[in-house]
Length: 197
Image (cartoon, rainbow, N blue to C red; front, side):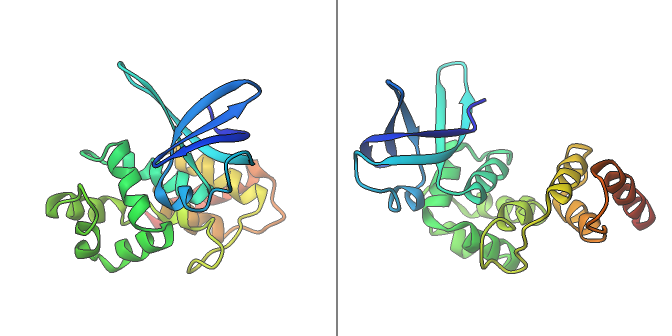
């Protein structure tokens, strides 16, 4: 998995950028929100990346922020939403706007994005309702944004890998004392979650 790329920006052809990393040029597809904020060609850049291996291609997608990458990863998990559609969504809406659209259950805003029809918009709203909290929490100024402690983020990741949804995991982490170790935090969070069910 390639999680991050740092190198010299060689070319910019929307939505593709070419980044030289010690003599190797990586072609990276980026959403327009990232593309418009890139510096001039010849400048050092760092992108958070998502690597996709398909039968016919290896694709690399880049994002200016971790929040964009997390939102992209949530989008591509949805049936009928591929990487290109996810890029189009993130090009048309910021992560905060996407979160607001999902919170307000506003399909009209999604339908305005090329490639998104009424059924896809409704499916997106339904499936993202509980899943975008993680991507938005990393955005400064987003509603309810907070930076979890290292312990908190480790516990959050553990709960998500155990199958809890973002809302449940974030709630459990918010109940924890900040002075716990990771293993104690996981135990406490699981106790909180078992009492809620």
